[in-house]
Length: 606
Image (cartoon, rainbow, N blue to C red; front, side):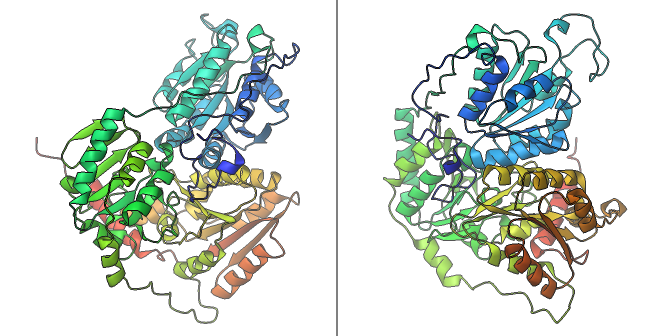
C-alpha cells in the first residue's frame, strides 16, 4: 500500500496520473515510525502542531494573506523548518494557489484572516470542492474570550454572532472545526485534516487568535503520523458487480472505455489503465479528465466531448454497443448542452464507490479501483472498436502556412506550443477558448495538464499556476490565459516572480470574454485593453527574474519561444500574443451555440 500521498515523487506517477497522489494511497505519512520526541514548552503549541501536521502530510508551502487575527499563527507556521510561507496578493489567489498545489501534491493549504479573508477565499474553496481536491483552509479567528459575549468585532458584519463565516463554509467544505479552546484543539485539527484526505474535499479550520502560541500538554510530543483506515469494498457486492459487468461487456460487439474526472479522487487511474491493457477496448477521456489517463496508451483515441470531440472519437464512442464510464461528471458543459448521443442501457457507470449497469442493477460500497482491477481479470479481450477507429482515422490537418508578418492566428500559436511539451512541462488551461485549444494538445509521457471545468471560474489559472509551479519546481509550467481572465487575478504574477518560478505565460489578447461572446454576445463582453507587458514589467520592478514580450506574427512567436527556452530559461516569461477578436477554435463555436440553446430553453408549461 502506497503511503506517501503528498510527497514530491507522488507528483508525476509513471502512468501520467497527473495531479493525483499515487493510486491506492489511503494514508498520508512521511515517516512510518512514530516519533517519541518531546518538545520544550516553546514548541509544544497549537501553532507548531498544525505546522508539523501540514509538513507530515506533504504540504511544504502554505499560501497566506496576513491579517491581525492570524499573525501569531503565521509566526508559528513559519517557525517550522519544513514549511515555507508563500505570501499572496489576495485571498482568492491564495485559495487558487492551494488548489493548484493540491492537484500535484495531493493536498494544499491556505491561511487567511477572519471573515474579510474567509469570505474572499470562499470562491476558491468552492472550486476545490467541485473538483474533489483535499485542501486545508485555515482562518485566524476571534480571541477565545469573545465567543459567547455580546461584543461586536471588526472584520465582521457588525453583529455579535461570529458564525456567519462558518455558515458560509459549511456548504463548500466536508468538515468544519472552530478551535476556541486548547482542550480539544489537537483532536479537532487532526480530525479536520484526516477528513479532508479521506473525503478528497476541502475543510475549514478556524483558530482563535490568542491560542497558537500557548503551550499545552496535548502538543508536547511530535504528532504520530496519520495512518488512516483504508476504505474497503464489500467483497460480496464487488463479486456480484464484477460478474454482472463482465457478462454485460463480454456479450458486446464493440465496447469502449471512457475515463472521467473522478478517477483522481478515487485514486483509480492505474486500475483504469490496467483494465484498458487487459480488455483492448478503445480508450478515451472526458474533457475534465485530460491528463489523468496516459495519452501514449496504444488504444487512446482522444477526448470524448460529444459534438466537439477529438476527430473520430465521438463516432466510435457513440456507436459502441457498450461503454464503461469511470468517474464521469455529466453536466451541461461536459455534455455540450445536454447533446451527447449516449444511451443509459448501454452504459456501465463506475463512481468512486458505486457501480450501475445499464438501467440496473446497481451496487454500492464498491471502490472504483477494486472494481476496475477485478474486472480486468474477467473481461474478454475485444479490440473491435479500436480496429474500427484505425480504419476510419485520418491524420489531423495542419494550419495554413502564415505569410510573412501575417497577423498571428490562434491555431498557429498552439501548433508551436505543442512542440514545447515534454515530460518536463505541465500545461495550465484557463477557462475560455484555452479550454478547447489546450484540449487538442497531445500530451507526451509525463507532461502535466490541469484545468477547472466543473466550476469554470475565470481567473483561476493565475493562482493555480502559482501553486502548481511551487509544488513541482522541476517542471516548467506553460499557462494559457485569456486577457479577460487575467484581469481578474493578475496581481499574483508578483508572487511568482518573488518565488523565482520559471513559468511561461501566454497571455492571449483578443479584447474580451471570447467564451461568453460565443454563448451570448453583448457590449459587456468587451473589456478595457491593458498594456499587459508593461503591467508585468511594473510588477517585476527590477527584482527577480522576469522577461516580457509582445508578439503579433508567427516570426515573433518563434523568436519569443526560443528566447524563453534559451537565454530566459530560468526566468518567468510573459508572452503577450495579439490575436483577432473573432479568432476562436471551431470547437468553441459549436459548444457555445449548444450551451446557449441549453441556457435559453423556455420554462416548462405549468
